[in-house]
Length: 336
Ligand code: EPU
Image (cartoon, rainbow, N blue to C red; front, side):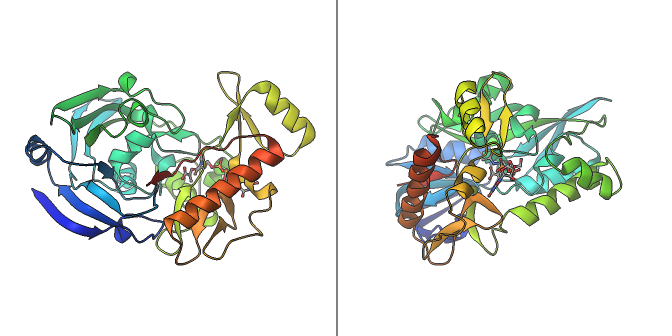
């Protein structure tokens, strides 16, 4: 089933709460419907959106916006150790996490309350509290926009890395994800070594799926704005990864700077800390600012346009570059 609209408001489709309009909006309820639709050919620009939790519309979108309404969740294989689940790209990610927790499937409970839909979980390789979606993704099914061909990307083809996949690189903008197949474990395995997670889980009664989910939800609720009340795109910037020598110099100068050595020898810094040190928690603009509990979240203080958000973000980037010599890259997608 296909639903099509012209001059469609994107306000309910972006968590920043920015007014923008799509010339054309297409929602597909099945892979077959999408394939038939694409076979007719598409004129002009295209954009695929999930829940719009990582987008900033700087102006109206003059092309076709696609949105998945594929919502089935199906077990495709199962043994004593694990379960393979094929999930429609339009399923709300947190609903899928809850589904797994309820059934005793281990792996993605740390991703509780991440905004967005399952299709984007693969494109973005969403992550939180030491877990990334890509660690549990076995395969991604998609349809190529140009020729309506069905494509399958196995885990290795996806080239997952920190907030990165092939869908943000050479496959960027070329495909529409229809299904993501996750492999979850039936054998208890937790990752609790991020920040105060372990402590929080202990306080709730110890390591169990429901406790981890609850702890993550509580930590997120305390640190991150609720998209229903404060417009934002979650982390607006990625945490920068710098050479070990640069990190050593910075930590020498700023001993309190959080820094996390990576497997490849480089060091990840905290964008939120860098931004806070530049004073941005205390210097909001009229319509935009950073969140008081987490400075890497740019918020809509009411009535912000995408252009204002982008200009503000650029000021933050410039200030961090000037103070620390570190270049911040945006995690949010700027749609111009
Ligand atoms: N910090 C500050 N000031 C701030 C924000 C953070 O000093 O305003 C410090 C914290 O005290 C801590 C460190 O920076 O020492 C790291 O902060 P936090 O644990 O909040 O995590 P993060 O690195 O800022 C990342 C993800 C989040 C994810 C959390 C937890 C990115 C870009 N962000 O944030 O993801 O929830 O870790 O795993 O990697 C998202 O992508 O939208 C998102 C929310």
